[in-house]
Image 1 (cartoon, helix red, strand yellow):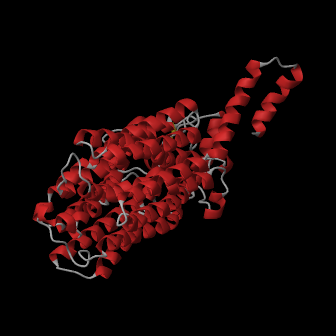
Image 2 (cartoon, one colour; image 1 turned 135 degrees about the horizontal axis):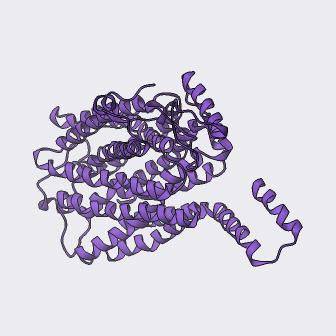
Image 3 (spheres, one colour; image 1 turned 90 degrees about the vertical axis):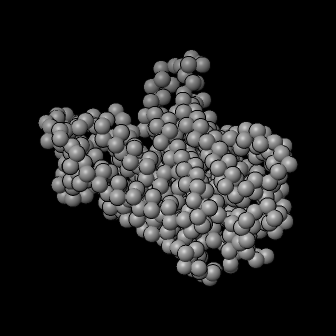
Amino acid sequence: MSPPPGIKLIRNREWNIQTYRYIVLLITFIAYVCYHASRKPTGIVKSILCPDPTHTNKTIYHGWAPFNGPDGVSKLGEIDLAFLACYSLGMYVAGHLGDSLDLRLFLTMGMIGSGIFVGVFGMGYFWNVHEFWFYLTMQMIAGLFQATGWPSVVAVIGNWFGKRKRGLIMGIWNAHTSVGNISGSLLAASVLDYGWGWSFVLLGGLIMLGGFLVFFFLPAYPEDVGFSFINGDEEAQIVKSGVGVGGVEGERERERQKRCESGGRGKSIGLVEACMIPGVITFALCLFFAKLVAYTFLYWLPFYLTQTEIGGKYMSVKSAGNLSTLFDVGGIFGGILAGYMSDKLSARAITAATFMYASIPAMLLYRSYGSVSIHANIGLMIVSGLFVNGPYALITTAVSADLGTHSSLKGDSRALATVTAIIDGTGSVGAAIGPLLTGFLSTRGWDDVFMMLVLGAFIAGLLLSPLILTEISERTSKTMPNSRPQNPGDAASQPLLQEER
C-alpha cells in the first residue's frame, strides 16, 4: 500500500487528516460529476434521433434511422432499458469487487471503460451506422462499466468519514449528481449544431480524463497514506501509523497495523450477509421506486419539454436541454436539505418518506400548470427536483454509508461497497423500468406518465413505514424517562434495555 503517484509527486511534507479528506471529497465529487455527465447525451439527442412529426416544420432535424420510424420512441426506451438493466445487474458484481480490489484502480478502470463506449456510441454518427443492435450493444457495455462508479465512491467516502454529520456532508457532496446532469446537458447541447455524435464523444472524453485524475490523486484508503482509524466511529482517535499510543486505542492500532501488514483491509462479506443487515432490503425497495421517478425525469424531461407547449410555444432541442438543468438545481438543494434534516432529527426514514410524499403534489402541479408560462415551468420544475432528488440522494449516500458500517459488522469496512451496490443496484432496476414504461406511455399521453410517477413516489414512501415506526418508537423511548417518575429498578434496567436495542 502506497500513496497514489500524483500525491507522492506533489506532497513535499506530511499532510494532516483534514487535508486528505478535502482531497477525497473533491476527487470523488469530480469523478461522479463525470459519470452522470456522460449519461446525459442520450436524453439530449432524443428529439434529434426521433423528432415529433406533428411539428417537424419547426425543427431542422429529420431523425436518424433506426429511431425515426413510428416505433422510434419505443426503441429509445429500449436503449435506456438496456443501459440501466446492465447497470443494475453490474452493480451487484461491482459492489463485491469494490470490496475485494483496490478501489482507486477499480474506479479508474470503470471510468476509462465508460468513456470509450460512450464515445463509440457517438461514433455511430460519423460512421453512418443505422443498425439498432450497434447502439443497443454500446449502451449495454457502457452500463456495465458505469456500475463501477457509485459503490466505489461511496465506499471511499465511508472509509474516510465517520457517522457524525454524515447526512449533511454527503448531502452537500451528493450535489455531484445534479452538477453532473447540469454540466452534461449543457456540454451535450453546446455541440449539437456540429452533429449529435459530438455530444457523446465530448462527454466520453470527459469521463476518461476524470479516470486519469482518480488514478493519480485519489487516496482510497487512509492506510494508503499512513493513517489508521476505526471505520464509522467519529470519536475514535485517528493516528499516524508508527506513532506510539497506549490503552484501548493502542490495541486497536496494533490490530489494524497487523491487518495492513498482512496485505488486507478487512474481509469482504457476501451479498446474502449484506442483505441481512437491518434496513438494507427496506431501503433498497424504497430506492427502486424513488429512482424510477428520478431517472424518468433524467432521461425524458428534455424530450417532454420539446413536446409540450409552454406559454403557447414549443421549445427547441437545445433550449429544452438547457432548461431541464433547473430540475437538477432543485435536486442540489433537496439533497442538502434532506441530509441536514436527517442529521438533526436522527431519522433517515422519516425524512426520506416526507420528501417522497411531498413530491406527489409537486409533480401534479408541474404537469397541470407548468405549461402556463416559462416562469411557472421553471418554479415548479425546481420544486419538483427538490422533493424528487432529496430522498434519492439521502438513501444512496448517508443511508448506504450508515448501513455499510452497521454495528453488526463489528467495524468491518469491507461491506461498504457491497451494501451500496445492493441498495443502488435494486434502485437501478426501477431506474431501468421507469424510462422504458415512459417510452410506451408517452405515446398515449403524458398524463399517464405522470400518474406512473405519482404512484411510484407513493409506494416509495409507503415502503418505509416499518422503519418510520421504529424511529418514532426509539425517539419516544428516549423521552419517556423524562416524562414520568422512575423507581430504582426502572432506572437500573434502562441501560440494559437500550443496550439490547
